[in-house]
Length: 259
Length: 323
Image (cartoon, rainbow over all chains, first blue to last red; front, side):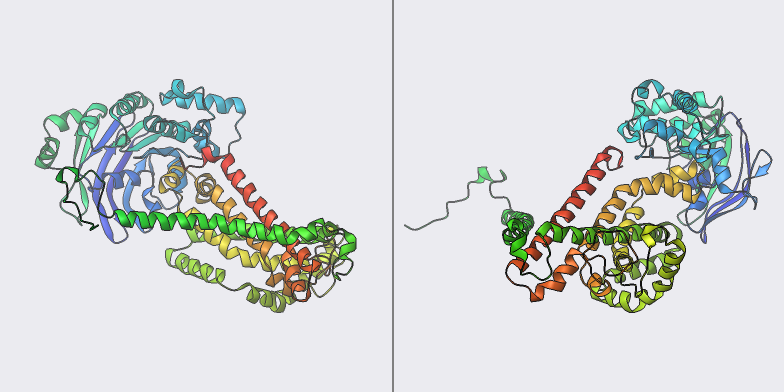
């Protein structure tokens, strides 16, 4: 069920401001693609264009193509709501719905499709998704408790369970570990390893060790200065990127000389 | 004996015994504590005044009210219809005002372009500042003629439902009164709900959208549950205002002392507050006590409504998102 995405000549705008310019990228199916780069370089902005979350911000729009499975996500007749149902997203800060129980959080996306699911199907789905997110054993006795009663790392895994419950093609992760402690981070990274068997994963991270640990391919974004658009400088296999990148800027960034 | 300042002992410096700004601290603490206590004292004073003045009427029997022109029977027989009318008018107002307010608040917070939203928010705040007597006059002069054909239609077509039976013109009935109240309380309810909706964390809205929700689904999933306690508080705020509203009802409603649900008939109902305003100027002795007793009952009802709201909000505090 996972699919690849081909991005070509993608420009991202906030109103008049060109935030990211000319991105060409292939995101392979059943693999982890990491996007790294200094703050403000547009990697998160780019990530949000992949499921059309970018345009939630007033005035924001995109030019160019992002093709998944032969279909352009930005074709005129494409409903962004449909895109988001196929391409799930996990955010920087864990955001389970505070008004819902743990189980209801997992089912939140499923219920949106107006499917009337039986109680036993729902229970199966909750267990399968939570197991998939490595959270089942920790919460199985308190599924009716509010999602906000969990720790930060557990909340983030709950958000991942919620995202995979709808069985998306692609999972986007926007710095999913930046608000978490090292042990929770490790749990999420282990989970990413398991998830890539079933999903195409794109992860934005500030942590280069994390990119090296979890990803198969890495893309490096950079920006020339404030007010200038961000560019994809280079993209390659992660091992290549971290051992012998072809661009000087990449090497400087990876070796910690700036950023 | 001359008071001399002892030389400053260096070793005691910095122990906080004479920290700078200490006086300001004491003064501020005094002011804020006094303000806090003032609220309790005021509330107690009102309650005590009402109880003290209402007591003679509360313990009086029917004979003692024989001289009072507007009271038949004992106090409770007199107050019950008034209380019923008060609650009925307030409930009509709330039933009309709540969907309207939630709709306006949602439009302002999530649908309207920013400039329009600001303009609308400003207008809503202005509406909230209009004195109730103006609303009363407006309701009587403008709204009443407007709703009369509607009432006539309702009565002739749906008259078999007791609620709408036997409409009589002019429409100085409880429904018109409730509608005026509704329009009066819409601004305050809308303003409160709008603030709550605007505070919905962007994180939760995006979580919902990223799951593939439409805007309306996002509102149902993230905005409304988050705003639930705020919506209840706003409703209670509006209900409190509707229960106590005097002038608008006094102007619009043709009073009566019945307990029934004939919403379109004039001369059936009255509210406690409007009744006090109507009779207070020409009352004396036990009549005044009776009016104050009705005020005490109104006070108790408003108090009860607020307690109920608080209980509803606390019941699901765990899921409120405040933690």
